Length: 217
Image (cartoon, rainbow, N blue to C red):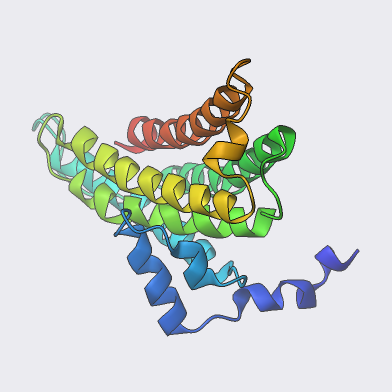
């Protein structure tokens, strides 16, 4: 099987700084919907891997700092690195980075609206979307009640909008336009497909956001 060969994955890690920068900019400008134009049929796994790794490390450190700053004075104020937290963060982030695209690919395949959108493209766009959570978790360090929720939900909003806008444009480009999907309005089949797709994407991403908050902050 070619997928177990290192050479199979080399093209997905062949990306330069300019391309990475342009793709990252799109995450923080979620009103734009040209991410796949930036990818131009050459999705990369390099940036998603390092975005996930950075998110894992920053989450582990920020979680410890949040506990440190939120201490009520009953315990000695010392910051300690937590290997267990790092392990949980690794499993959680990498797990979602693979499970979310796989689930999205399954849903798109079942609804027969995915066209040629493959798993690598989904991993690419989802991996980049997680970059929005990196600045958000730093805000969770601030020991103010409710502010941590505000930051993680802001990260969720930015990330989810980026995902939905760009995936929708990608589907339209492959023939899954709004008119085609919702053509059978008498039975509501078109509306059901759209609702299933959106609920599946946003629901799983919201689960990631809530999990990030409750597990580490």
